[in-house]
Image (cartoon, rainbow over all chains, first blue to last red; front, side):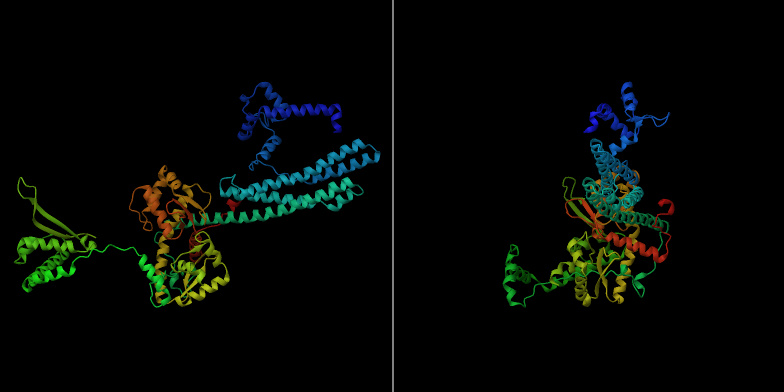
Length: 413
Length: 206
C-alpha cells in the first residue's frame, strides 16, 4: 500500500502495533476493568499505567474518579463478546455519507490531475468508507437479532425487558431513518462515467443495503411481537397478584350465579364427563372367532374343586329343625344387641346386656356368637365397631387368656 | 369420525385439549371442518365443542341447558370459585420460588426437585406452602414438605393444569388450562367490576 512508503506512515505503524500489543499484554486486568467499570491501579506498574494512558486505552474521567477504559475500548470489547448490556449501535448515516461524497470528489480531482497514486489511495479510502457504512448496519442488525433471540435474557426483570425492547425499537427506527437518507439517484450521479465507482457505490452498496433493509423490517416485526408477549405476561402477573390479594381481603366473596343466568357464559358451561363403556356382544357371527381367542387368552385361575355338594348334604343331614330355630333365635338376639350398641353412645358389655334382658343363653355361647357376628361383618362395617375383650390369664402359671366379657361400642367415623 | 375416536373420548371425559396436552388433537380441533363433524356427532349427547377466547384450549359445553345441566354447572361453578384462591396462590408461589420474572404460561416446565430444594431453605416459602397444602382444595394431612409438594402437584395434574410426561419422572408441564383459569378470573373481574388491576400504571411504563 502506498502510505507505508512515507515516514509518518511507518511511524504510525510502529506506534499502532506497539499500542495494540499493550492491550494483549494486560488483557486480564483490562477485561476485569471492563467488568468492574473501573481499573484496579494496584494491578499495574507505574510505567504500565502511563503507557496505557498515553495509548488512550485508559483515562480518568474526573479528578476524583478511578481510572477506567476509554469508551471506544469498552465498545470494542462489548462488540467482540456480544455483550448486549454495553453494546453500542451507531445509526449515524449522514456523517458517513458526507465522507463518501468528499472522497469521491477527492478521487475525481486526483484523476483529473493525473496523480494516479493519490487517486488509488483515495479509492482505497472510499472503499473502506463504503464497507464501514454497510458494516455499521451489519453490526447493528447482529446485535438486534442477538438480543431478540435471547429473549432479552441479559436483563433480569420483565420491566427491564420491556424497556430494553422499547430501546431496541427506537434504535431500529433510527437505522431505518438512516437508510432512507441514502439516495441512490445521488450515488448513481456520483459514480457517473466510472466503472469502479459504479460497482462500489451502486451495485454493491445497493445490494447490501436492500438486504439490511429487509432484515431490519423482519427484526422490527419480531420485536413488536415480543413486546406484545412481554406485555401480556406482565398483565397476567399483575392480574394474578391483585386477584389473589382481593380474594384474601374478601374471604366471603361470592361472584354472581352465572350458571343460572338465561345466557350462561361459555367459560362456565363445562359439561359433565361421560365415560363411554362397552361390553362384549355376541350378535356378530364373524367376530366369534376373535372373542373365542380373547376368552382363551384370559389367564386361568386354578380351580380347586371343593366337594361343595357333599358337604352341603352332610350338613343337611345334621340339621335339625329345632336346632335351626334356636340358632336363628340366638342370631336375632345378637343382632338386637348390635342395634342396641348403635343406639347407645358408650360401650356396652355383652354379659350385662344378657343379664339385663334376661336372655337364657349360655354366656359362653352368647360371647361366641357376638364374636362370630363381628367377624362376619364386611370390612368397612367392622371399622364402625370397637370391640374390647375383657381377658384374664387362665392361671398364674398359664398365660392362656380367657375371655370373661366383651364390650362393644360404636366408633366415631 | 373414526379417526377422532380417542379425541372424542377425551373430550367426553371432561378433558381440556390444548397444544401441550395433545398437540395433534389440538391441531385437528382448530380446523373448522373437524369442529363441525364433532359438533354434529355430539348433538344427541347434548354437548358441543367450545373454546376460550384465544382458542388456546377446547372443552365440551352443554348444548341445551336443562335442569340437570344447570344443577351440574352450579356445582361445577362452586368448585371453581372455591379453587380460585388456592390456584392463584400456587401460581404466585411457583413464580417466587423458582425466581421467574413472569407468571407461568402453557408449556413452562417445573421440576419438582428444584421446587422442593428452594422451598426447604426458606422459612417464609415453607410456611406459605404449608398453608397452601392444607387448603381444602389440596387437603394435605402430611407435615412433610416432600409429601405436601407431591400432593399439590398430583392434584393439579388431576385437575388438568399440569401434565406429567413420564409417570416415573418428577417434572411437570403447564397446560393450556391455565389460560382458561386466567380467562375465568378476568371474566369475573370484568363482570363484577372488581378493583383488580392488570395494566401497569403510567408511572411504571415511564
